[in-house]
Image 1 (cartoon, rainbow, N blue to C red):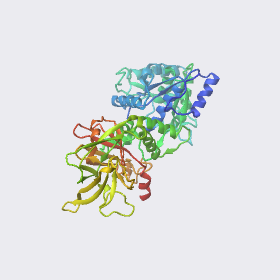
Image 2 (cartoon, one colour; image 1 turned 90 degrees about the vertical axis):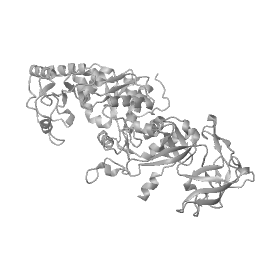
Image 3 (tube, rainbow, N blue to C red; image 1 turned 90 degrees about the horizontal axis):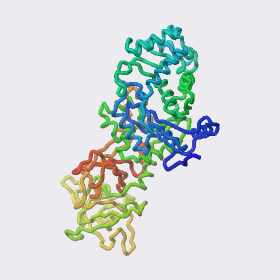
Image 4 (cartoon, helix red, strand yellow; image 1 turned 120 degrees about the vertical axis):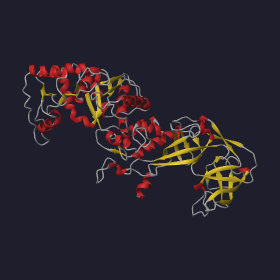
Length: 562
């Protein structure tokens, strides 16, 4: 009856079981969802779960999912954030059925508020924000009724209309739902549903100087939009009674059903918009798309594949239980995806010159190597080889320690996909540092194997000195060293949890020449080093590559040695 799941969708879970029951009982005969972010910041890794659940649930049942931007607070919204949200959702692989706004329903909200006033279910209150908090009570003590709670419907209608006409100043009056000041749920203690804000709105201009609160606009928008299942994170569970009360009291014929799930919490990651904004404003990061940020813009720029993020959400699972997911699982999903999709290339980050003295002068030959050994059907790329090369400085040790199988005086190693070479001499600078290695090669080992079947224990990567590209490589790591970076230190400064080694910039790296033709966002596995993605800062003269993730998880070792 319904469409089957496709690649990247979340498997059956308790949300789908509840929807199955609704369809079986006839509570609904179709499924429609929505993703309703507030455009006051960039989307982050936590939003991936909500996006994926809403879009894939609708798809599973043959329904649709809308993007509805919550623009009920004109102070905070910004077109920059609106555009970034739309871009992020599409990058993740989802296309909204419609792009809507909370402001699309301002007229319906106003009419609904008038209806509640006429029913005696809402009243205009003159208490200040501080007084309202004082009257609300606590979890252990009931609240007190506002002295303005007993106003007649006629008086409330007149005052509400005057609020709309702009006769009162910000904060002078509010419209509150009349529910129960003794309720055990503080959200039900006569919540504010309209406030005065004499601020032009990005979409409605000066039409309104009163705006509905999110908890009032949201259920009305859901119902008016045709949403059947309002899927949201667990912090809205206590708001569900108010959600249901609003739809019941405005007598909506087909009210939506709210279902909550646990949000995605990731250790070593900061998602608080306020604190992320502080990182940007203080210049700790270069912007919302800094590759160390947990924003989708930052992860995209760093080189995280969208498919890996979707797989991460699926692996983490959907439940109602609060939990914290280890960052290592996200990195595992990124590695797993890139292992099958990223072309291979060679790059030397800390170059040491090698001259092969018995290799012919002015000769260049080429090797055809697999683009990706995991997908041989992609074919091969060509690598040039000549008398002078670069290898990693760490792949040479003048006095090798036990267990060191790379290059050292008299030792033979394999140059990946090329030849066996033997180190004859290390040329030094005046300060004693090694500036060049003089080596010989065995021409009978072309392709990396010897005809006499002799074995070498070390294989190292290299690039052709005469056919390589200089580049800047940015070695990114986790931005924080604390598992919960939101925990502020003794002096109240969460930035004390920053990782001082979250970025190390390497200039003068030598890359295989084919990488110069790549485009920003193209990602490669640099053999023996990690996965790297070309950054938007790249120019034709200076490519810049970001480390997406290392080949193996080195963080556990760092933590153990801390």
